[in-house]
Amino acid sequence: MAPTLARPSLSGVQSILSSSTTTCAATSVVTRALAARSFSTTRPARDSVPIPPDSPNYIKVPEPPQSSEVRHPFVKGHLPIPRSIFPKKGVPEKVQSGYVERIAPKSAAEVAGLPPKSTQESWRRKMAEARRKSLEAGLQGLWQRKVKRDQKQAKESKARYLANKRAAQAPERLDEVFTRATIRESTAKNTFVPVDPEAFEKAEEARIRHAEKEAMKSEARRDALVQLYVASKNFIVDEKELEEHVNKHFTEKIHNAGLWESGRSIWDSQKNPISMRELRSEFSGFNDRVTATTSAAVKTTIRQKNVAEELTGGKL
Image (cartoon, rainbow, N blue to C red; front, side, top):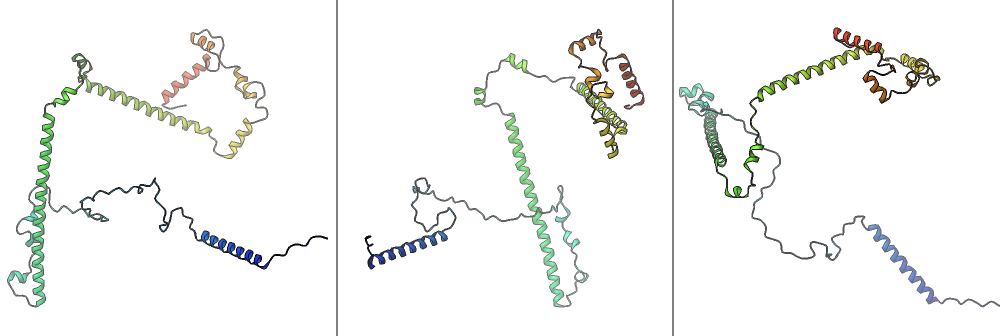
């Protein structure tokens, strides 16, 4: 008979249930903490993390006192450049007596000495007089400011000029004399570059040579343009001509052995390329091999073509 299994007591069941409940509660708390945790790697300020040794704030160093410099707040934008109302030279008309009376004259009633007819007219006369005084005071103030600024600039410019002149004419300092490298007199004479007395003549000759080269380049460009115009009659301009050329040159017998017309190969018409020995023999006049560019007939044709191009003034 099989032995019977021991039945657990009620206290053991209660302990198991309580432990499982505690585990589930802890798991739920951790889950909520992970869900609430931010994905940022920056440590929050509320964490009381000790300062590591590699931090600059690990050792408290007393800070120096602040500078007494007064820094003005930055203001965006820029001020407009004032218009110049005075000429650069001479005393302007705007600061002379009688200028304000000419540009802002009084009314006929004021000139005649008649009293104002109403309070509004009296107020208008008072405002007009205030504007005349303000205009005259403003012009005089701007003129005095311009005179002072010009005098200050002239004084500073003259001081800089005199300082530069004194520095240019001053003798060498002793420290420069004592620390300068020794240069022999013979070396100084050999390395001295005298002024060329024919510099202007050589420059004129160089200018003429440059003009001739530019003329040759222009003529070459003109000949190339004419040659392009002459060769344009053989250009393929439509699909029909392109198809004809493709069918003519790309055939099945294009690589067949034979003459140039049938084989369409350079090796069939001129055999192997010319060698250096044959080129030397051709230059010396003892070459027995006649090529397409060295025969007398070809050379004569080329000469006649060059003569015709020179006579007609264009490429053929």
